[in-house]
Every structure is written in structure tokens, then in C-alpha cells.
Image 1 (cartoon, protein in one colour):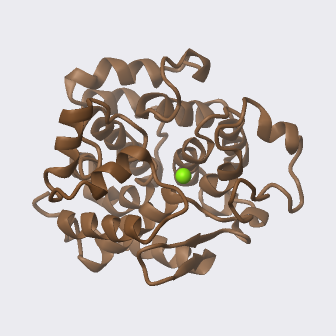
Image 2: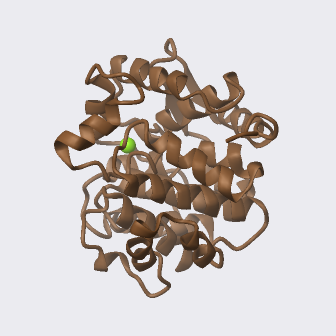
Length: 303
Ligand SMILES: [Mg+2]
């Protein structure tokens, strides 16, 4: 939802969404633009669906299968793809080396591209408990992101969604979650996830993993509904589709399906390159979510 709302506002200035839609709008907020149709989801959701389908069809984590799906997707010409993700998926190296070697040569691999696609795997692994869901997040992130900062950020996201789906308060779970991190990354995440942090204090563009996750948590913390959380994220500008997608995962797990306005779910659709031309609509996405929610119990043993 956040992805589709944010896509037309990618790289916009702060406040652009509310300037255009000062109040909840009957049918206008899924407005399209910038090459996107109204309600069209982007690479964030497309990759998340590929993650979901791999987990369900392979009955668990099959990293070579997932990497091959990502490669088919990128070869099929998605409208958008992150620079780093595209490099890793097209550099010709095998699944277990492509991201690591990309990182060794570029030293830049802490984008938000592994975080943006993690809502589906977070639902799937939620029943498996804290350690298992955080480890699964790290391994999926590492397929495209060689910097372990991206692994840890995605691991936090998995765990916060697990807590929320379990009926807990994900904001209250942040200190315990930070304790589970690689100590090398703990301090930097503690800064962006602190109760008094504001996205204006970010030291990087919000296309980087730390401010992206921090902004999503801030949007949830400072608002009181799914709709308000997404609006806050969209109004940050910058990498709006991804920041709002990440926010949507947290807000969806916290507030539930009934909190999502029908005027947003109605036009939502996910064209899926690499799938033989399928486009997923709300019933397909709901079905996927239900199967993810049931899917993991046995398959994660040994993770
Ligand atoms: Mg995108």
C-alpha cells in the first residue's frame, strides 16, 4: 500500500503528499504519475511477492531458488530496480558470491533494498520465534546486500513484525531487539530507533537502510492509525515508495487489515515481471498473506 501510494512521489520534497492531498480524499490519493498507474506497486512489492512465492512453493528458505527468481524478475524488465540490486543480480556470479563480491569491490551495500521487500518473509517466519525470524531475514538480505548493516536492519524489521503479529507493542520491543543485533551495528540502530529521533536528524539519504527503518518506526510512533502513519512517511519525501512500504509493513502488523482504507486497497495491483505476465490484485494478495501466515511452522526447523 505504501509502495503504491509513494511511487508517484519518489524524490519529491518534504510535505509534497499532504500539499496535494491536505485531507483524506475520496478516490484521489492513489493518483499514479511518474510512469506509474494509480495503485500500481513497484519493485519493492514485486520482490516481496517473489520472496513469498519462493517460501511457499519451496516450503521454506531456498536461497538459490529465490536468487533465481530475482534474476528472472530483473531480466524481465521491471519498471524500476535499485542500482545495487540490479548490479548483484546481473553480475554473472553465483547466488552465494554475487552480493559479497559486489560489496568487496564497491564498499557500498547498505541501501534499503533488502528491507523494502521483507514484509512477506516477516509474516512467514513470525511463528518461528525471534532467533529464527531474525536469522532468516539476514540470509535473505544477504542475497543482494553484502553489507551486514542491511542484514541487521532487515532482522530488526522481521522481529518487530513478529512482535506486532503476536499482539505485542513493537515499539516497546525495540530495546530487546537491539540486544539481539551484531554488536558492531547496535549503536547505529539504537540512534535511529530512539524515541526522540526525528528523520531530520538522518545523516544519510533515506534510501540507506538506517534512516529508512528509523523513519518507518518514527512514522508509526508519532501517529495513531495506519492511514496517518503512511501519510507521515509519504510526507518525508525522498525514497517515498520504499519508506512508505516499510512503514506499511509495521503499521499493517500493528493495526490489522481492517485499518486499511478500501479506497486504497481497491486500485492496488502488482504487475509481476518474471512470472509470465501475471498481475496480482487484492484477492491474490490476501490469499498470499493467509498462506504466509500458516506456512512456516515445520519448514523452519533447523534454521
Ligand atoms: Mg520502488
